[in-house]
Image 1: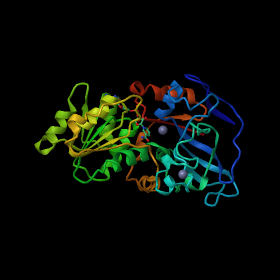
Image 2: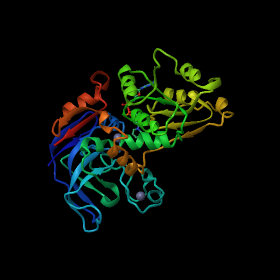
Image 3: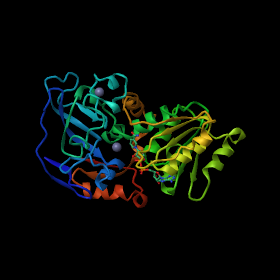
Image 4: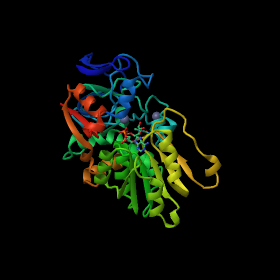
Length: 347
Ligand SMILES: NC(=O)c1ccc[n+]([C@@H]2O[C@H](COP(=O)([O-])OP(=O)(O)OC[C@H]3O[C@@H](n4cnc5c(N)ncnc54)[C@H](O)[C@@H]3O)[C@@H](O)[C@H]2O)c1
Ligand SMILES: [Zn+2]
Ligand SMILES: [Zn+2]
């Protein structure tokens, strides 16, 4: 089969590799029908994620058709159309039993395109297939359900639910990439009074409006602190501030935007230390949460995508054939110019 193989920083190739086989009786082999690229794949390609070594097949999101299953697989059958989530669930360890499979101790968690071969391929081996795949209803396009593999649960769980968004809240979302936009969509489900999206790129702010932000702020030219003050009685700040960028400046901004007793939900992956100004914050009763996506909300989000309450198709800006990874990575990596949100590659 063909797959997109990582060959060290800056090097990848769509090349012939052995087709995956069942190794453990709880595995399934899934034919990849649709896959996509994540910002994390760009980090890996830059060499920022040294766990990923030469020869690894990239990718951690897919929708596909089950081709074969091990003797221990009970709930999925060859021919089933399934979502392959970025989080693999062993189902039996302490964290999986508590719904925190991102921290799985039994060999799951985020492993595709990282610790094991990933989904940017014609076929993928899926460990713990019963608990790590989701059978898909008919009538919803594959590319829409593909958005459930990573960005929708990430924005919803790590942003909206960790941040405890409630009806009437003022919600500030720093960063309007695919993950920040997912948080906007998820926050809308709770009827906040205002969602304020903050980004440096006007194209992303335009997308934020379409995804349901009430107010957008370009923090190159305008001060989001002023905007949030003007929206809140007494200028107290946002009930919930969601960080969806991953830089010290945006984390510190999210903290500043929150009201006393407010909640700051960090989603961004950080590569360097950020300052928590405890000398100012100790008195403000704030709650800060962090997290890796667990994907425990996938069944809920699948129902919302199926019913159309979450319009997952909005994320898809570009479409390619499965062998056009070079073009797809190029378009995705130049999102500022191309306006790319999610690019999908399909058979
Ligand atoms: N916690 C998790 O489980 C998890 C899962 C997936 C992704 N992530 C992380 O979430 C973050 C967002 O992901 P994404 O795919 O949307 O990324 P992205 O790079 O597409 O989007 C980031 C956005 O932030 C904006 N931005 C950059 N600097 C800014 C600044 N100073 N002020 C305001 N806006 C700024 C950019 O213009 C861009 O629109 C990344 O750090 C990603 O690694 C975390
Ligand atoms: Zn991802
Ligand atoms: Zn587990």
